[in-house]
Image (cartoon, rainbow, N blue to C red; front, side):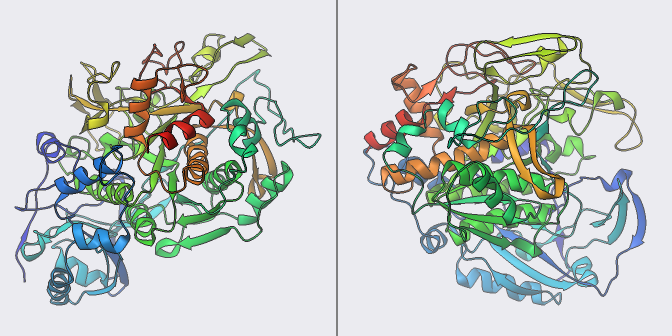
Length: 626
């Protein structure tokens, strides 16, 4: 007791750990650090936290045999393999890829020397809930936890980077929960409130239809019409027997979803929603509309599926724990998340040398477990076009706008959901818009009319500078390396009191995203029912709609195929390369438009991914694979 080590990962070290997209780490040392969002460096230090206060942190353990785990995942999606669609249970995963009971007992004994107690061990043996006082955590991790205030939020955080005791280094990947600052943003957007732009009015379906046919008031019925879901409904495929999961960082009123489904003409079971409060659950706040729309969309596409909502506080601990809870429960067949943040926020170059790569790896382990257990995971690709940092760090405050992507969509074991604008025409005060082909969503077409303040709102997409190119993108035409001459600059010293620049890696062979896309433009967007916001609301959009839509679509495919289909990215890219595009194929190609930088071209591109799904054809193609 009393010996500690820490390692401030530089970018090359981080990339080395992710060389094959597998979370491995040097056993030498690990820095278990909180997310700097908001950063303690530009927050007001309110002094020491209450030393006697009892708190709970999460100790995330290393996956064992990560290379074998990735190989197993690949085989589950390789037709003809003995492991094809042979997914693991949670107990099987724990036995093959997690620390043993004996190892966990040793960790418990080491923590007890500091007065800390393990109060829960997740079923997958990777997430330990550890309880103790602030003083005991200070002692155990050689730090000092203070209270801070930033952007109106009071939170606790370590004044100096926590250090993991040497005796725990081999098995402990990360410690989260010492910092309670907000961790992520919801990825939803409304139609712009600028001069001359009309406010959309909610239109409900009429005449027994579940669709409106009205841009800005589209429903899941319109989504089914556009992306050819109806042939599955006509065969009785409605998600019956399947369960969709939602990970969210704000609570909501489940009655909102029931009101939405009833209002658009869907008949659903009145007990289909199960709320799971992770770490006490999230707050009822502005993010609640995100949770409402996620449930409405996923559960509307698959009206007979059950819905489990993993509702966690908006902290790094809550976000990570929600995924570990979901995969440990292994109750959901597919899972979506519409929250995220720029992936480069985790890098030491953005945090005065302090690395948060351990937390990225903690997420990745959960996503790998999901894949091994057959749970399909979808994440919104972001709503800031090709410049993901622009939402948190706007040019108006002196920040540059480098090409960047959002996490967790950039994770190689997650399907990244991109956004499009579907054909529509409208007359605004500054001119007319006539979109004749579905294209990547960017509000460049509104800016071209003369409207200001819209850059770079649109679908996220680009090249990860952290996660290397995964096996399923190797050899895919259109997949590219990261662009040259990209730098994040804080010219006014907003973050740390003095200006700094981080030069992003050039020509890095990173994971490309998005993978698939669907309508996300608020101008061609959706109805939401959110009681706290006034009831029926129109003109909502964002890639946060696409992730739960794909979630619901997967429930239909699971039912059609007769079981879980698992991590679908390898399947999507294989089908694109083998089948190409066309009316009878699984995907439709987008070849016009851009996301403010990356252009849609024939085949794969970073504006629309593979393209949009033809769901009935996609379901049949997957079923025919084995």
